[in-house]
View (cartoon, rainbow, N blue to C red):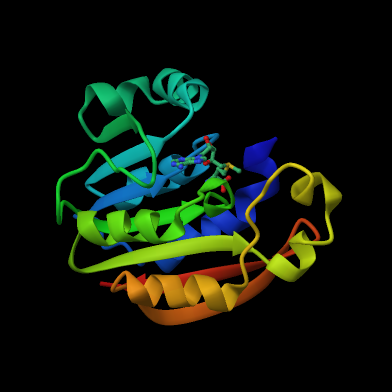
Amino acid sequence: MLNRRNREAVEKAVAALGLTGGETALDIGFGGGLGLRLLLPAAARVHGVDISATMLERARATFREELAAGRLVLDEGSMTALPLADGSVDAVVSTNTIYFVEDLDAALAEVARVLAPGGRFVLGIGDPDLMARVPMLTDNGFRIRPVADVEAALAAAGLSLRKHERFTHGGLGFHLLSTAK
Ligand SMILES: C[S@@+](CC[C@H](N)C(=O)[O-])C[C@H]1O[C@@H](n2cnc3c(N)ncnc32)[C@H](O)[C@@H]1O
């Protein structure tokens, strides 16, 4: 369900990373695992971090072969304390995740920490103006931030905005912020 609704956003976000085949990639908040599925053929090694034990369990069952081959590493953890070494990743993607993150500055500082110099980070978020009109989201504690605030937080973390793409998916506007360290 999650995968179906978010498919277009995740596909566009992974494509925006421009992976070249031999790199190490990370999906933060991988949820149903579509991002992992798309990253695997495009990268040499893929990491996935999610705060949910349930999502970890599902992904471990889905990606048995890739895990056994060492091409995929999955960790339970938060975007605000990533279980990865400094400068260990070439490309990071995260879609529809920061609504659940209270301390965005801490999360983006972590993304910048794990990225190698010149590494890319693509952040996908629903359009805040449209999201703010959806009671199912506002009533359930989603942190809906203006895009300008997110862009400022990216810059403060040392992630330079290279491209801002807007598109529509599932009746909601979506923003892809492509950055580089
Ligand atoms: C709405 S789902 C998005 C899944 C997928 N990225 C997509 O776009 O379809 C949000 C995911 O982020 C995870 N998540 C929430 N807070 C997180 C945090 N602080 N750190 C890492 N993952 C988090 C949730 O467990 C969930 O799997």
